[in-house]
Image (cartoon, rainbow, N blue to C red; front, side):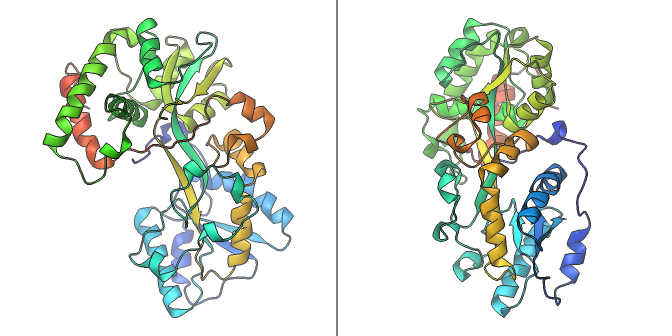
Length: 384
């Protein structure tokens, strides 16, 4: 799933913008000893977080070290960097890349088989045991921050949040007008709500949905069960069946006190809570039967990085409690380590969000699912 929820997080300063071009043009130079060249695929708010929270702390603990934070320029440019690292592996030269952030290890083709990326499962990093096994997708990408869709609610009005999807549906019906979710094509949280509902009506069997198994004949009987559920709860939603225009409008309804519960991406929810956008009685919780959809961003380290050992030291620092506490409090992200390893204050504050599963949903299903929602559930709406 593509995570498109940044309208709430605009305004962050860019760090190192334009650095990608300089890096690509400098392929014949050797990396400076002690300087880690780190390329980012994430938004500028993430680079800013590294600049303010990670860079000064790591450099202070490792005198003579400097983190060079470079905005990578997006998918095609990050792919070019991966290709440069692969070429350096083949020629046994310095790629001038010490770490890459928020990309997968599968590009270019053959990179994994050739040994391009460090295998974190074999290193015995001191903090590796703290990482929640549920967030690890593969051996080469080390997850350090994440986001999941969560229930966001006013604890004064909802003293005990639902623990299962069945309980959530029961709460919606018992509290008419107090719950809202976004149109699926205008807010990823709304998409995740109907996707979790689809998983529910199909017995919470995630294996039924893959990237390459969609067909109308296969999906429509499943969708028919979903429409029954969603139409059943529609009269109990905000204003008897209205849907918000995105993630931020859902949070704004909660902030105004018009509703008592919605669903939201955890990063947006935590930013709203930390900045006082919502009442101080606001809290978040996760389903305990099958969690809402989530995703985690990781770092990769090329095996031919000139400063590989120092890069691995930084990687271990990223999954330390020191950094992970800041991921939550400063960035508004979810930790990649177990909540039991976090500060007691954060453990208490987010006791209801710990999960043992990080479900996903295949992108190729979504256009058909969204089209069906507009036809079968919200036929009075014009798709914007």
